[in-house]
Length: 101
Image (cartoon, rainbow, N blue to C red; front, side, top):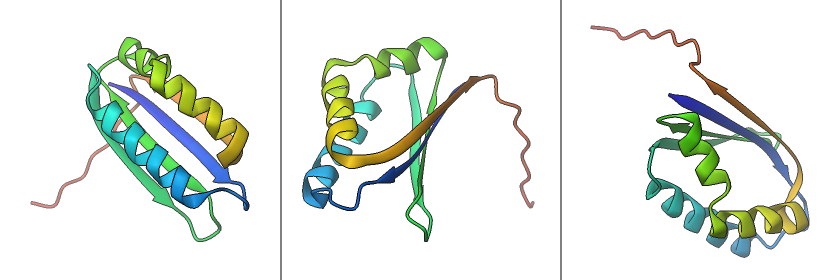
C-alpha cells in the first residue's frame, strides 16, 4: 500500500461552489484510476483539512498525480483555492490495528 496525505488550508476568498465541483470531480476520477484503494477527507475546527488516499503502490499514486485532468485542477488549486498545503507520501507505512471482537 502507498499512502498519500494532503494537508491543506483554503484561501478565505475562494469560490466555494467551484471548489466543491472540482473536488467532487477529482474524487470520482481518482476512484476510477488503476490502483486506487480509498479516499477520505477530514476538516478540523480551525479550517485545516487532511485528505488521505491509499493506493496499491507508488506507481499508481504517481500516475494519479500526473493524470491530465488532475494536473489542470492542481494548478487551479494553487492559483485559486489553497492558502498552503503539504503533501506527505510513503510506501509500506507501519500499520497498527485494533478491533474489538
